[in-house]
Length: 154
Image 1 (spheres, rainbow, N blue to C red):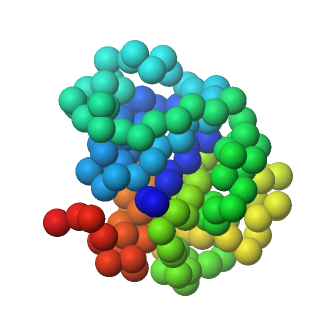
Image 2: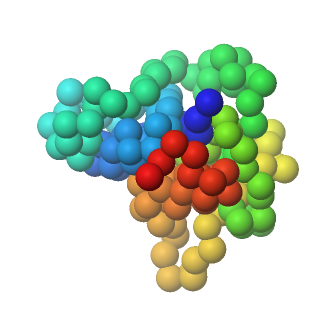
């Protein structure tokens, strides 16, 4: 098993490329939920992922419901600046999904309302609206990896 990162309608190819590189380095699955704000042959996307795309366990989905249906036995955690609990308030386990929304709007309100018990946030000052998507994904993923002992990583 491994952790999973889900990007719901990502808009910025460089963020997705950076996240793909993190996924390749950690054996994490990457799920991209359409519509995407870029073409998957975008030069920026490829450049950010460097030559690691062949190592990324990548799946495309036409909706987030499709992800939920395919992985209904798994646990899902939803990143949101509106969450009251910090990501460090949770105990993660192998196979968990970290779900992130589009850079400009985050996750849809109805999705957040459906999963209030697994909303999590990164602590930050009110000087900015949010952290960069690829940084947020890396922080949360590495907390999950830390909690599970960095199995399979040097």
